[in-house]
Structure formats: C-alpha cells, structure tokens
Image 1 (cartoon, helix red, strand yellow):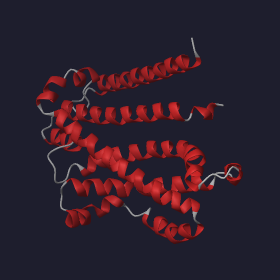
Image 2 (cartoon, rainbow, N blue to C red):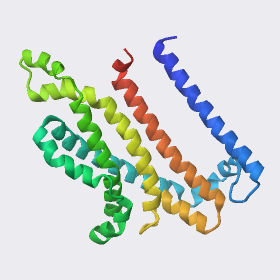
Image 3 (spheres, rainbow, N blue to C red):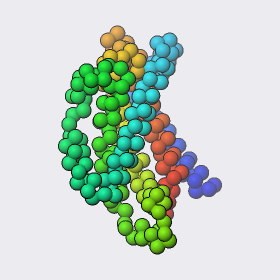
Image 4 (cartoon, one colour):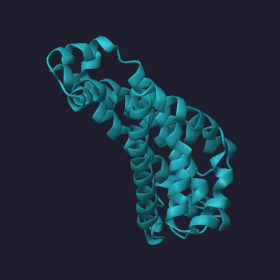
Amino acid sequence: MTRKTKRALNYISYISIGFILINTIWYVAAMWLDMKALPSPVDVYSAYPKALDNDLVAHSVASLQRILVSIGISLFIALGLGLLMGYSRRANRLLGPMVYFSYPIPKLALLPIIMVLFDIGETSKIIIVILIVVFQMIITVRDAVRNISQENYHVLTSFGATGMQKMRFITLPAILPDILSSLRVALGIATSALFFIETFGTDKGLGYYITDSLNKVDYIQMYFGILILSMIGFVLFLIIDLIDNLTCSWKDS
C-alpha cells in the first residue's frame, strides 16, 4: 500500500468516525429530550422525499451559487490587493489603514443600506458576503507575501528571472497554503452569514427554506435544510483539502 493510499484511507476513516459520532450524539440527545423540536436523525434522513417535493434542490443550488460567486470574487480581490500590499510598502501604508478600519465594522448591520443601494436581489446578498469575508483574506495574503524570505527571490534574480516569473515560481506557491487556510475560514463564515441573508427579499435558498420550515412548525424539514447547508460546506471543505493535498504536498517534506 502506497503512502498516498494509506493517507487517503485514514482521511476517509476520520470522516466516517466523525459522521457516526455526530449522529450518535444527535440520536441520544433526541431520545433523551424527547421533544418535537429535536427530531432524531433517522426521522430527518427519512424525510428526503418531502424535501424533494418542496424543491430543496433549487434552494440548495441557489445557496451554493451565492457561496461560490461570493468566495470567488473575494479571492480575486484579496489576491490583487494582498499581493500589492505585500510587495509595496507604499501601497500597504495607503491601503492598510482602510482595511483595518473596515474590517471590524459589523457587515450584517450594513444589510439595509446595501439593499437600498443595490435592491434586494442577488447583488446585495453577494456584496454582503464579500464584505464579510474579503478583509481577512486580504490580510492573510498580504502577511503571507511579507513572510517570504527575500533570499528565495535572490536565487531567481541571479538567473535573470522577471517579476512575473518570481511571482509564479516563488510567491504563489509559498502563499498557497495560507490562501487555502483563509478559504476554509471564509467558507465557514460565508455559510453562516448566508443563512441570515437569505431570510430577506428572496424565496430561494437554504436560509429561506429553514426559516420557512420553522414558521410552518415543520421541524423535520427545518433540520433537513440545516443538514443540507452543512453538507454543502462540508463538501466544499473536502474540495479545498483535496486541492491542498495535490498542490501543497511539499509541506510534508
């Protein structure tokens, strides 16, 4: 058995153990409390036919699209500004205070303003998620660039490498682990924020589905919506881990 195969099997076993453990705790809590507001996982999992009839697939696709678009735009902005601030001290002195000042502002409090400026459609929801996650990503990229030893660049400089070649062969590979870690954090934050954002001005999305089920006192469908939203985040986490294993295997050495 190769080392990669062994690592993959260990990874799958950890995921399986975690899944079994969470569902066991959930089942025991449901049996112990014996409340309608906390159905057992067996009841929730068996309710998928009704969820499909309630157009859960469309709600899931809407939420997934919002997450991917928001994270994609945030990553694009973070790479541009983060690299600029990491390379240029002047740019960092100019943009740093703006980022630090904007970062602590509670972005969800800006939701009414964003909706007034950009209406209550998709644009406003995506902008809010971007504002929530982009600043920590910018800081992560900037700090990762600044932590690269200059000696690494001197080697390529002695061979006459251009600025783009230095970025391609040194900067981007060096900061990739930090970018992926930042994406994991941003993904969790975006998924959490999406639940709140989708309760306003939309009839599509898992946030709307969960809230609508709660209003109908349909706790099983509410938990099913929570489960699907969690699974979306989980799958995206796995994809990031896969990218990490494929592109950053040099970390293990």
